[in-house]
Length: 500
Image (cartoon, rainbow, N blue to C red; front, top):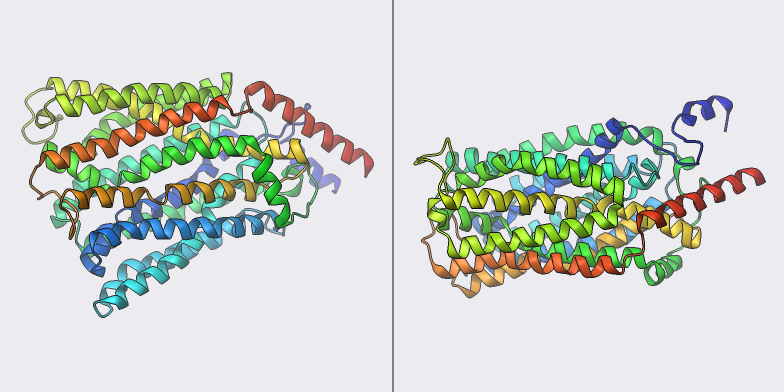
């Protein structure tokens, strides 16, 4: 390395062998997750498009997400292998981010603008499935970097939790804005979710935000997307055979997968129709779903800053996940009981039709929702920087730096296990009589709809949180262990530099 290059990148290193990045760059890189989540949010509503325009039955439309998620998981290890072998002029991560986002833009446009112009019948179904299969390859290109890129962003155990904080805040703002956009703008404008014009507007917004977020993320990671910030700081050759050893012996990633998969099963079972039932059918005012998100978002942001930004930094990411899971479990059960024994019809908020003051249900629901979503913000977002810890643990354990494989292995199991999630909701809807169409805001109330939606929204989530506690009991990477790991890796780098 030239003296000029050494001077240029020396500012990122500390005397104890750790490398860091500024909070602004940390925030900027989390925008890569925003970029892919915009498309993930778009596809969450694809069931309505498949039923209304492709002509699929409810079960097949619900199964679409399952089939595509399995396919997405299968492609993960292949793309992770490419990431680990890539180290060119533009780094290891940026090429996958850029190619992935361009591909997502093109394929998503085709899915929601071309399919319904094709001849009705099997042609539309086949076309949608084929284009979606290509779409998910590009999705993995970009999405895998959110996990893999963190390992080179910083190896400081005290700074990594900041990723969860910034990522949680970004996703919170994004989901709040999109939920309000759909419930307060698109649905009132078109009167139904079964509208091609609605999908065009939703696609356009998601696409524009995703492009901007990708540009920010690429610029943010650019100085750290270099060999000296990869693992031991030396190029490595990785063979597929070595992946089997990682799967078998890296206990940290095994336990993290257990925690994340069970949470994901619950989260992805909450398809968009569940929110429509709770607010549009049980409460009777779907616009309140956006209002509730807005009212609770500030409190959730505080949870995210305190939990991921302070608690995880001080006590370690493992302990943060345990405490957050316990908190989320308590409030989650309380919220379910409130729906069951309270009067949801009295839910209302200032600025909405019929508001004449806060009801007891509204007050308790606000408190429970703030606590539940706040703790879930911590437990859900702290997982991402923990993947980077698992990658460093692999360097410590075997000397291999395989962040691409680590992230995509995580995704493979996560997606395959949680792939049944949308099907769970679809089967439950079919079981209570919704075989040809999902409920929307015009569906009449029934007790079966109420109990099924509460179970999916809160029952499955509680099961996932309990699994978190089990997994973290066997997760080896405490705060003290991570400090030992980074010290050992620094010694390996120093020894390798002395031998050159």
